[in-house]
Picture 1: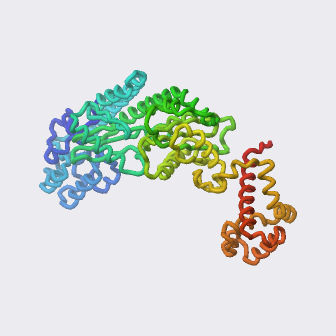
Picture 2: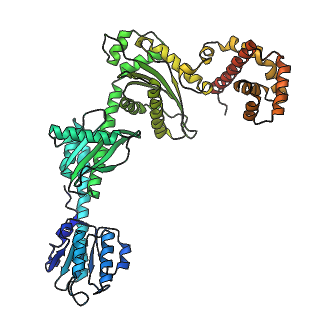
Picture 3: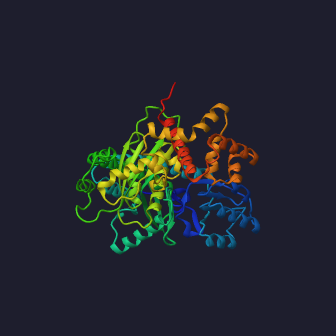
Length: 550
């Protein structure tokens, strides 16, 4: 396959109907491809051009008037026509010098017929030729796609696909992934390969967000790179591209590239899922950690493929819990296929990830490949990327929560850090942070039994206010919480409650009446703040665990 379907100006003038034609100017533009053929006699009609048209004219619209003929020719050039064929005769017996100079300046082919010719015969001939070539190109593309499917089932799928692609487009092609060595077909000299790899790394790695749309960039005035991302489930896997030298891109080239990218995406996703199936031992390890069963350090290192001696790398435990949109079927299966995509994305962030999907939750053990100076910033990037992928696959209205344990040093303590992540996840709404290190008081509440200790504590300190609110439909408990959270600032508390300060004074008097005038003494205030937070947490857990009634 090649670009034979593109009929150029040079090829068209070799057709029999052009045997009395002569190129009098703009010969450097003869390689331009023709998309269609039109008869246009005046500059006003040029507005209907789309670009790529070969124009036929007798000079009827401008004749010997200099201003009109230059305006006509300039408009054709501006509208990106590919050439002008003129029949010499009564309207224009010869091409004026000013038209020749303008055509040569813009490398715009100017062709004259020295004998009369029927324009209808030319349009019919060239249009038929264009349609036949395009139909053949479609048949070639279909055959190419079928052959790609066959190649994708073979071992060494990616190199074979690239070789097949290179044979089809007859130019240098490449396969680039940020985390591995690029593939070039045909192979390049080492110095050229190193230079091109650095150019690709600079172009694709210079942005905060990965490039996820097809594009191009120039290497020199005559050389450019065309690339297309390989995407799967909203995640970038690689880039496939080609280097064009003194050649412009076209629909055939782009369609061939698109078919190749689709096949490579299937191969890469299949490979990722096969790798996931081979992780049964790793999943058993996760099950032990989730159940908080003791796991020997040596066995964890063995499962993770880490050196058996020396200091282990730092790691992080992370939980991702999600709730799909209300429109989802209640029996929807857990999205296990996301684990492979998560694994690829996290690897790109410099992490060795271990992932387990259970129900509506993902458990992560994230091992640092190299020591990280700011682990919190790294984890924030991790959460951003996981959120982006999850919402793209499960829907933009999917609710997502995270819980992150403290940085681990000993792998045998991973179960303890997973429990910390669990606690951070449980209190995230109250603590407003997914990090266990930010939980503060909630680190204690998690371990206090609900019955009878926690509820009894709430009853002893808040029961008078709770009873008053139930009987009078008031909001004394909420008012006290806001008043304490604003560090006893009456003005700020009134603003947050959307009430007048006089109303707040009345509520505070009622609170003092219910709790006693000494409720703001340090030891009483501390107990009230604990009781208020415990009450809010218990309400949230009861709402989550309460059975739904139809």
